[in-house]
Length: 408
Image (cartoon, rainbow, N blue to C red; front, side, top):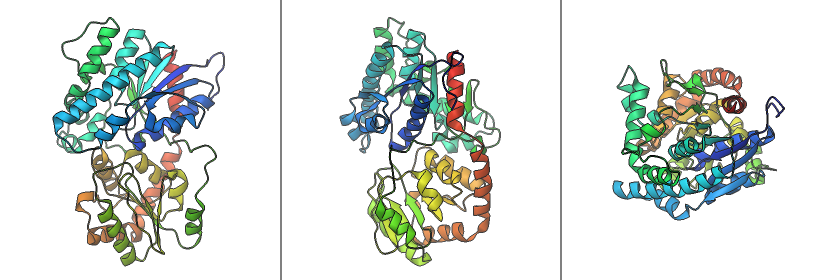
């Protein structure tokens, strides 16, 4: 990481992020790298994730979202989800504005907070950069696949229009507070029309002719920062040392899935294939234990995955990049959101035999797909070949360099 100098001065950087644990992880890596380069970093995020940054000595301005985060994971009618999203946007906008007004040189923002950050940056005349691990278009992979020309831009526009109602009150409130003209259409499309965006994605995973709009580009993967002083749990280390490499099973911050059913399915499948397994409990609370299966809590994937024989996971972008960067053969079991997009890329690139949506998982299907993943050497070969390309990309260093350029 290039240190700050007279030609590369220290910056005051506001990093705004919110979402699931998978959303937060890449921003820990970004914030730690910015701090190491000599910049003054302040993070805006919810109380739930503050410790992920304060443990690294990074200042946090917490958004009071505890009640709304609890409701966000509950099944409810569309109108109630919109209202909850509006409350989250309004609370986040207030904290972001107060933090930006303290004095910043640039705003870096997660896509969920980007509309408010863009309005604040416009009023305060600050550069604002979206730092995304997924594009809006990736949330609707079927629509992208149905549009051979301009598929990204049309799908991206569609998702932004659908999400606009969640931001309208917060954007209108911000504009009134900042003395700006209140627009008739307070939507994502207008707020983000000319905003630069950097994606923590390897272009090696993207489809052919996947053209990003002007001002948007990929940098490569942004690995999360490990907690300071982290070391593996002794129980996990003992399990790894006691036999052959196990298969990883994990579904991250996905809720609304049947953890008990998945646990029983994993146990039966592992027994049929005579493999050992490490299961990450995640938000679904998956728990499976016997002599050959161990359930664990959070564990850095950059440490864990190189020790796995294969990885069965929900195909979130961070987990997908981490498994491929480790050279670990991957079986995608997508739950929703952008995960079907990444799962489809794994199969299209010859890295996985099939995409097995979580709602279609049975012992027979999981066993057959995992058997193919383990026994067909082509998947391991293709994964190791892509691993070489990923290792050539230092996404965080490139992002830090881009930030300095954009400020100048």
